[in-house]
Length: 73
Image (tube, rainbow, N blue to C red; front, side, top):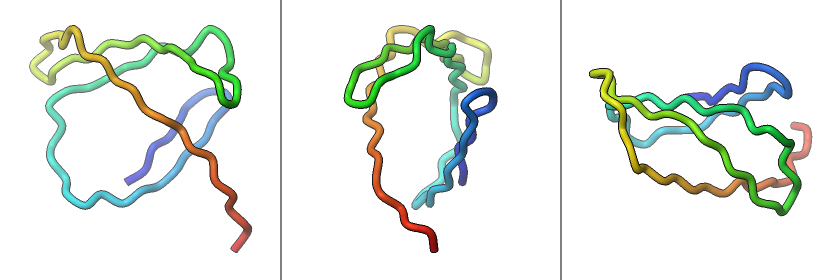
C-alpha cells in the first residue's frame, strides 16, 4: 500500500500490510496553519466519519514521525 500527500509539499511512501481489514471510517485532516519544526510538536484537526455518514466523535490519535538515513540504491 502507499500513502500520498497532495499539495505542497508533496510526497509519498510505500509500506507493507500484514493483514488487511476493510476500513469502517474515513478521516479528513485540515492542513496545519504553520509548518512543523524538527523535534517539535504540531496539532492537527480533522473529521472522522463512518462510511454510513455518521460522525465519529471524541477520538484522539497520536503518532510519531521518524527520520532515517536512506542511501541511494
